[in-house]
Length: 104
Image (tube, rainbow, N blue to C red; front, side):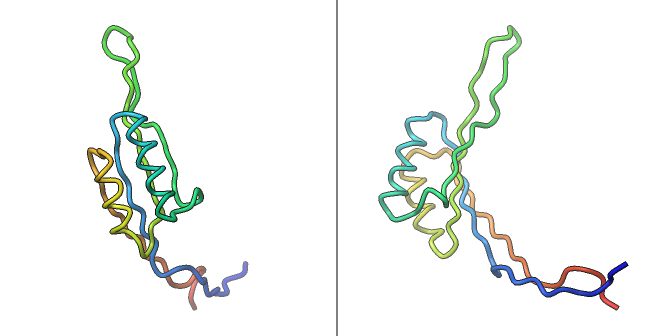
């Protein structure tokens, strides 16, 4: 079994700004505004979440979640998403450094 330690080179911090929208039109307008401000398609994702059915079996749409990889530009992303009717905007920071494997 190989128990060597490897150095992992990853960005020290990744920042994701996440916004919830009630309707697709507002979410798409926010995405267009992000693109206009030089965020790229690779930095933006749109996901439907929370859809389901009510007691009668009728479909109830959930919210739409826009996530922006905004490292270094989180304030720009927050401002744009908030100004386009996001019902909730949160910023998540994930730091990653260190070693992989057992140390002896």
